[in-house]
Length: 524
Ligand SMILES: [Zn+2]
Image 1 (cartoon, rainbow, N blue to C red):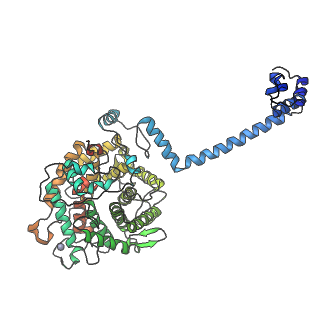
Image 2 (image 1 turned 60 degrees about the vertical axis):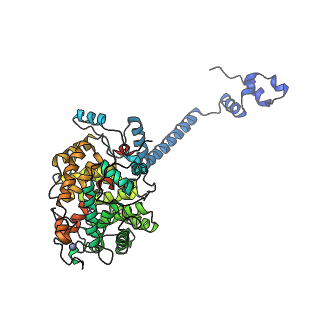
Image 3 (image 1 turned 90 degrees about the vertical axis):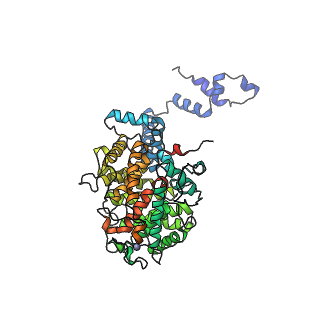
C-alpha cells in the first residue's frame, strides 16, 4: 500500500469540497474523499489508532452478532411454520407432497419404484390446507328404486374438490355411486338403514344403544347394546349416518331428525374451561368409552357445520375440537380414557378423524397437535409403518392397521409411500371380515382412498356382504338394521352395527377419494 502524503491530507482538510469551478481544479483524489474518511486517514497518519484495541473491538462485535444470529435461527427453526416451510421447499425440490412424514427408505426398492411410476402425483396437503371453501348443497334424494344407469356429469361438475364432503350432494352422489362401485341395491340398503334409525330416535332427539327402550320398538328388535349410558355416542353415530348421505337440518328427507339430533348433542355437552365436553355421563366415572363418545360427537358437529355453515354449530364444533386438543397426552401424542392419558390406537383414530373433520370444516386445528398424532403412530407401527398395534407392547392387528393407515393418509402419506402400499396390500390380503364391522368400516375407507384393483376387489365383497346381511321387510320391525357381527358389538348392539354398516355403504360419496380426484373432474 502506498504511503499517505501528510501534506495532501492537510490540504484536503483545509479546502472544503464544492462544485465551484475552483473545486473542479482540485486533484481528483482529494475531491473523492469524504470528511470521515479523511479523519480516519489523518488519525492513522498521526498514529492515534490503537490497532490491538481496534481488532479486539471488531472481534467482539462480530462475536455478538454471531450469537444474536444463532439465537434468532434457533427461534425460527423451532417455530412450527418453519418445518412446514422447509418441508414445502423439500417438496418443491423433490416433487414430493409429504409435509409431515420423514422420508425413510423402504425395501424392496423395486416396490417403491413401481409405486412411483404407476401412481399419479396427488397433493394431499393442498387438499387439507384448502379446506375452507363453501359446500354447495343441492340435495334431491336418490330414489333407491331407480337404477343408476348413467353417470351424471352435472353432479361432478359442481364438485368442490377442496372439501371432502362435497360429494354428498344428490347429484354428486348419483355420479359417485356409479363411479366408485356402488349400485342401486347399496343405495337402497342405505335408505332402509336410515329409515330404521329414524324409527328408533327418541322423543328428546337422541338415540340410545338400548334401542329396544324406544316405545315404538318396545324390545321388538333384539340385540340392544349394553352401553345404555352412552347416549351421546349413539346419537353421534346416528347423525354421522345421516350426514354421510347429505341429510342435514335443511336438506334431504330427514331434516327434522337431524336437527333434533344435533340439538340433543348441543344440550348434552358441557362447556368447560378446556372446551365443549361431550363425554357425557361417562366423564364422571372415567368410562372407557368416554373419548369414543366425545370423538364421534365432535365429528358429527364438524360435519354438520361443514354442510350447513350454521354459526351456532361452528362455535360448539370448535369448542369440542378444543377439548380434544386440551386432552391430548403430550408424551405419547395420543388419547385414551382420561385427559392426558397415554393413548391407544382405537381412541386415537376417533380423535384424529375428529381433528380431520374440523380441518375440513375450516376450524382451528394447530399443526403441532397433528404432528403429535404422527409421533403416536410412529410408536405403534411395525413392519416399517405398514401395520399398527393397539398398544405398544401388542402385536399389530388388521383393525388397528386400518385405523393407523387411514390416519397416515390424512396426515400426508400419498400413494408413492411404499409403506402405505405395503399396508394396503396387507389389508387386501385380509379381505373384508364377516364378523368385525369396526375393521370393515375403517379398512373400507382406506381402500376407497387408495383405489385401483385393490378397491374394486374389496368393494365387490364388502358391498354385497352388507346388502345380503341387512334385515329386510320380512323381518318386520328389524328391517333396515344389521345384526351384531363384531367382537365389540354387544356394547353398541344393533344400533352401532347399523350405523357402521350404513356409513360403510356411503363410502362412495361420504368422502372424496384422496388420490383419485382427477378422475372426478369434468372437462368441457
Ligand atoms: Zn325396533
